[in-house]
Length: 569
Image (cartoon, rainbow, N blue to C red):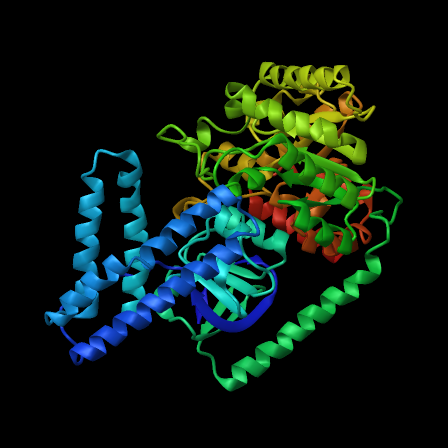
């Protein structure tokens, strides 16, 4: 049994699919007769062509004709009779299929790379891609591709990038398990959005299993079993069924209000990464969208920044899908560990503290203006709120808001209909913004506290570093004080304060946040109904008294004990 971190609740039982590039080791050891080696090559070549056609077919749902042309180039290369005949000639000379393929491919790569013509130089990369796939097929190695999974599996990887997670197909992905990461890593956050069970930070899962092995993943306890016994499978099938029944039982709260026993009402909203996530929020009784992470629209775009029209359609779909309920859209939050295929960020010693989020948008106003125009145009389809990420100074917020006002005025002048009221707010994820919240509230319509970054910046601890993970302390009194400053600052100007970091969906944090006066809790859709159950069992007056005690404590452990004793009463 492997121990990890339960990052997205659930239990998964299924076959392993390793998301790990294979290591190709070529040998000139002939495994059979010349005819057998030729047959091995021909079978692998046929499979390579079918693989490329399959990848192209899957990709055609998301890519333009121009972008799909790369697969046509690969097919042309794989079907080139000259490539095949040279390899078959080498096999006739007594070489193995894999050795012959490597030698001929390397010769062609060198030939293309030496040419003066840029077009032909670029073909060298095509030969590399095709020959790598061909060699893997000759050697019986699996090239992982999330887009081509066509059976139910549990993904096993060192880690999943945000774009990996965004391309997971819920139909076939039972869950995923990684070697590194924590509850606030982007892959974990996306897993909760997609309602896919996940265990992260196992340390050694890749070396413990092979493709096709059976896996039990208990993403409630953070435990993973490789090749379990029949008895274990039956035991966990029962646990899975019980978990699903419990989830089903919470559905009675779907249309209930999020109101305390003494009549105080709050709003429970969902975090989403795109239009497809709206259904999860609605099905789990979400009273709005508290965070639409628009960066995935950019990360899923292969060739360039998404156009105004592409973005408009996505924002419109979400607003219509929420049927008049509030939708808070975060403008582009790229940089740090979130990269783009078509834009190179500068190399920085610490990219999390560098050129990212609003800093990038204020520098690249062309990109920013396109997004704002799309948002403003979509505003007539629902109740839109726009918030800017990683605001550090009042000037930054005012500069960003000025760009918004300029684009809104331009659209109105063009005769485009826009909503009468669009709230413009900001993320509070930098301690400087929390401390100055009362001043920011004079200009912002609302705050949304991003605790994932607020905690790591307050503690000077990278949330992805296992060595300092003990400093990720959502209930530390210092963090609670920053949250209180933010909420009080908003309320001093008659504005509302929400929270869209993972802390908002933490059952241990809910009583404290209620007591601190938080107006809106935004979380993964799957956490909403359980949070509603907790809120409806609490007294606002009692939680306010408890929160006041908590902010005057010294350690997170003391706060945890306070919360436990209060809830036990």
